Image (cartoon, rainbow, N blue to C red; front, side, top):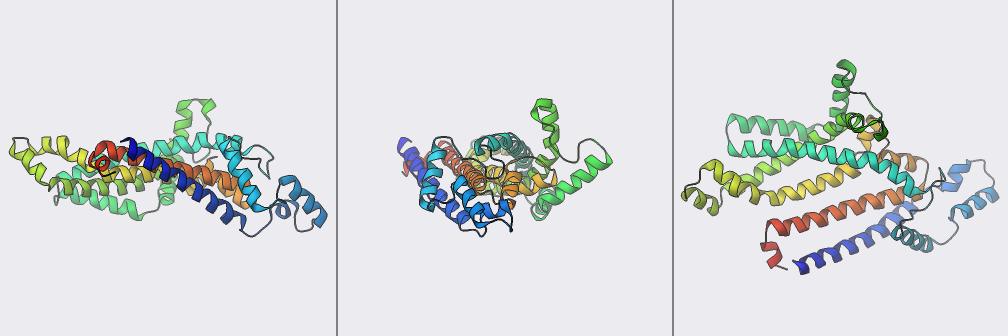
Length: 315
């Protein structure tokens, strides 16, 4: 297990190093100069040059890359070009919206998908299975922003149970904050629950056809007992992959939902920073999101080894 973990750690560090290079140079070669954008088209060249020097844009790109990476390792993400405030503070404020939203949506997705997938697999070919698969097909086909607009129309405009947008803030209390995130979390969770339920059903059906399941039935276990004692646990391996990828997507890919509900999260921060050519903010936020994706995948790999000891024996 130790050797397996060390190999995954090495892969994690190499992935982060490559990702930092790609993120920095792809964003840096994007057209448009931040200093010129901030001063406008009528700015004098000497004024633009002075602002570039103030922002640290006049040094070679390789030096800026090393300074950026070194600062991140020390916990310093730099200073925003537009707001002139530390990027770490901006990320910290927005993270307290995006992270609870992602965890809330992932929890809802899992709570919906697991029972639905297990129910469909246990009734393969029956009306219950057909109904669940039909619902998941709709969930996969319909984009989450459509769900978001329908939820706003029904629960905010017609029923007045929730607000149509904005975030009350955690200072207003846990209930107020969670209430603000409920509709966005549901709109994010429904499509992901559809995907996860289909994977759970497919994985469980494969397990139910294995020899050890027939052996368990031959030893006297009922179909239900064999399903829960042996089937579900062995079916979790591919499901864990999807859960890990879903958390990464929910954290990094909720920009549209944050726009629909006007939430001050990381996705909205990236959108605003791209619009204002605030490169240091874009680079730092994207790197943080990539770090979260790679770290989650690392945790999923370790979870694999715990669920299936055969993976440890192959390393």
